[in-house]
Image 1 (cartoon, helix red, strand yellow):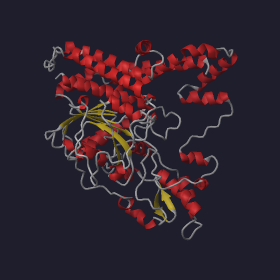
Image 2 (spheres, helix red, strand yellow):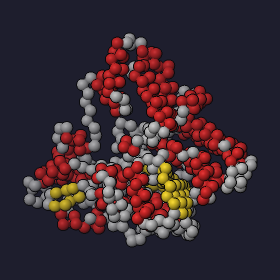
Image 3 (spheres, one colour):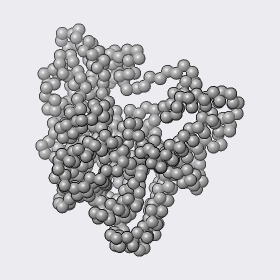
Image 4 (spheres, one colour):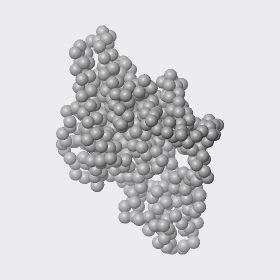
Length: 556
């Protein structure tokens, strides 16, 4: 890649980062983020045959398979598409390419000594760090350091700085109870913990997967099966506060090891929501909640497709043996695909040939298509999404159809999360204070409400205004007596703001959230960069904020 374009990319990244810090943008654009989606397909006992593509021909196959079709005619068009996709204007990129074509091939040699440093600088700046902070981190840790090691260093530096700032706060009203010797001692412990994680990352390595997904994926137990009654948590993980982090189970190698190490070495609990409802949803949960005496929400939700969608029973063919739907995603199939399926079947009075069955079933599993008439399939409606995920009827009504699918596809499965939260009901009979990160449309809040746990104060951080409005509307419609405080961006929540909240109502009892999975999910074939990706790196803000809350509460 030419030196000019690389410098252009670096300068644009810095400019965007500085604008974000100045308040001219709100961090990560919500239109570019699928906060919690994945392309999990339950294809047990099903082998994809070449004839499964019989329904899709030519360019239409790519359109309906969810893959972008890109066949540029030259290397320059590839470069043009790549940088336009990054957000640069077409005019700017064309100018850079023209200038590059006029330059000598020696530019690659000029670029090589600094390209790695610029790449690291850009990554850190996009995560919200200043250029000065990023440069110092690279200088101290070395160019050979991974992004994970650099964020370790910067997290330790930020925590130390934040806790130094606690010293003068002891004179503020409501904070007289902080211990004078707390910040120095705690800062030393935090730096030691982060340094320990860095050493573990070097020894274990991101590519060596030590966390294995269980089969069946039932975590510490489900309502209809055996349950584990006890586990031992690492000392650093013990609250207050309780914390609960969620993300997709099927991630690149090493991701769950890293998440676990940052969240105080707590092993993840992997659960598939098909054991709670009629749709699969493979997720990992890292939390320090008790696991004994869990109870499910009642009434129990429909457990099969037949129970959840009884109107489809009349039209369901005998050769479609599905009893559960696959993971509910943020997108749905097109009308052209469902029309093509109908035409492929209408020529047969009885059971179609096996090759046609395989093709139809592949698309039905992929897009969660259900039968709505003779030889007719259709995608699930948004209100059916709400029902399967445990949300109230019409919870997302009033926003666009596209936004409904996106918001619901990124949401918690309420019955699964409520089963885990149920242990809090007897622990907090007078109510609970919640810090909700990446709140979405309020899955955690609805789970607590359905359990009968009163929410005294909820500080909710959610970048999407559409999602914030959905949660606010539900809060008002259900006559919640507590306070709902909305903030737009986790990247802007700092120690001073946390101090203000915690001094006003005495700390948080639960910190909950699920950071974006864009760079973790298998549906992202182009930017599946793990926790170093643009969106999924926001996980480190969950850790940063949780660690700040724990540190502040340890001194109260």
